[in-house]
Picture (tube, rainbow, N blue to C red):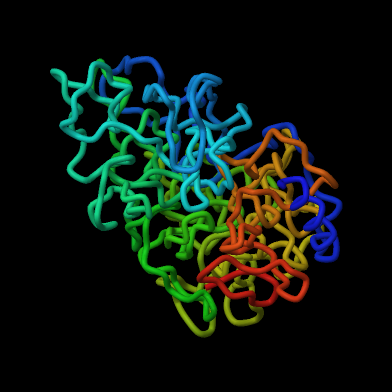
Amino acid sequence: MRLNRFVVMAATLSALGGAALFAGCGGNSGTSAGGNGDGGGDGESTDGTVDTGSSSGSNEGGSDSATKDSGKTGDSGSKGDGGGPSDASLSPDVFGGGDSGCVTLGSACTTGGECCTGTCTGGACTYPACGQTGSACTSNGQCCTQTCTTGACATISTCSTLGLSCTSSGQCCSGNCASNGTCQPSSFCSQTGDICAAGSECCSGVCTIPSGKSIGTCAAATPGGNCTAVDGQLCTAVSSLDGGCGGNCCSRACGPWGPTGINICQPATGCHVENDTCTTDSECCGSQALIDAGLPTSGHPVTCVGGYCTQHMGCTPNGDVCKLPTTSCNANQDCCACMGNSCSPCKQDNVGVPRCANVNCGDGGTACATSADCCNGLPCVPNPIPGGPPFVCANTQCVPSCAGCTTTADCCPGFSCIAGLCDPCGGSTPDGGSPGDGGGHLPDGGVCSAFGQLCDKDAGVDCCVGLSCLSGRCLN
């Protein structure tokens, strides 16, 4: 069934310019926003307090964390749509993904066998069936919270964590009470207060783990500036048609996450804007790496401090948010690429965010800070060549499974950007860039295009629920 989707959709994407792709499968193509690669913390915490392995696992664009096969149901367990491991034995590896080839929590699926957790509910990989708070237990793995205290499953958060029963989404840390009556993922990263084993799993990049434990909860994000929500966190949708400012999102993009349809802060394309999450300086717009690449900046490098990109000094560097003629988004029009009103260097990227960009666009292989720097809607993706600029324009309008990405909009329809790679990654991908099962799904089980991805309704490449096909991209 998956192969049929690959083959049918390949011809469609070829017509859209997605046949020959920028990066092939197989490697971590210079991913941005890296995780700590600690594999989800299946050992006990050594420092006793906080795992800050990554920003927003995130940011869809982190490096992939290691995954052990023990996180999936073994041959003796059962996998299915909504079921769980037959021995009900959970471990921190249940949050995994990475090189195992399985699909992570919150990603799209058609069967439980595709998911690291072994469960697929409502078209998304979900947390397995598990013991509720207060139920009898003899081991941590029997509990949804993976915490068994004096013979009973214990509470670990003030909101209901993944797997716990619910009657409304407001009860869940994730903001998603699924159709099976349990709290389930809403995004590619975990929300404040939800269960985690490593910082790379949390939107904030910080998992607070009690001393001697291997499980904790995601800490709140503290971005500062004019925003309160970072990539992956819940938000209230604001239309991007007029350069909408994305509500409280630092990225200025709020739209539905393909597999769940729930509105989250979508990562802007390319470099990370000021106040958004980061793990290294080179991920930030206006960084020294982008200065070295010859992109317009003020000459004052932006750095990553405390997990967030600092505010720029002087004119606005390429990639940071700017003011369009119709809206300000709490930004100015003083782009370093062209000061004053003599030209218009503020352009919307592939997810509708107004970004300072080069006056003249670049072709494939050209250094970029955002897709707004690239010609004809080409994605601005992590550079797979060491020693070069951190981001370059791709050679085609979307990139395939296993290729480096900064946001799901970079990936071909059917794939999601998870931990810096177009996911699912690890299986065969006919024709090098056919759609997969990771972006989003239509009610009949067909693949749909997620926020910012390519679309062509007449050619059968339609948008996921809540999105419209506008100028060849799915936006809200």
